[in-house]
Length: 114
Image 1 (spheres, rainbow, N blue to C red):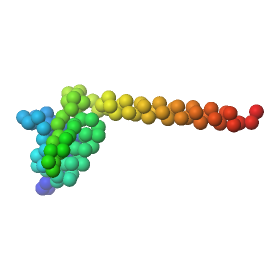
Image 2 (tube, rainbow, N blue to C red):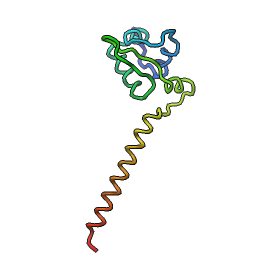
Image 3 (tube, helix red, strand yellow):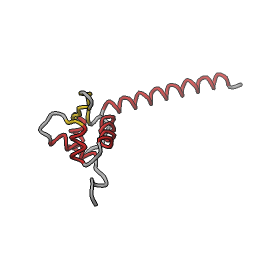
Image 4 (tube, rainbow, N blue to C red):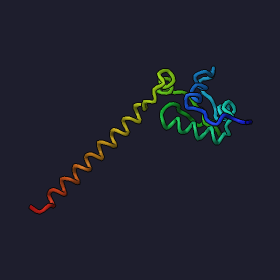
C-alpha cells in the first residue's frame, strides 16, 4: 500500500518537533515528513495547538509551529494530562455553571408555594 500510514499518533507528530534541529517547523515540512497533505497536517496541528502541546504564529502564508512545555511533558511522561490553561478554563466553566444552578434553585424555592 502506497502513501502514509493509516494512523499517525500525536506522539509521532510531537516527536518531529523534539527531534528537529530547528526551533520551529512550518506546515509543509511536517506534512512532507508525515506523508500528509498540507490540509491534513494543518488540521492535526491546530488540534494539537488547542490541546496546548504546540503553539504557532503566522509567518507569511504559513504558520510556524513549535513545541510547548506541555508538549515536552507529554512526550517525557506519556501523560495525556490536560495543560493547565485548559484545566483552568474548564474549572471556571464548572464554577459558573454551579453558581447559575444555585441561583436558579434559590429562585425556584422563593417561587414555590408554602
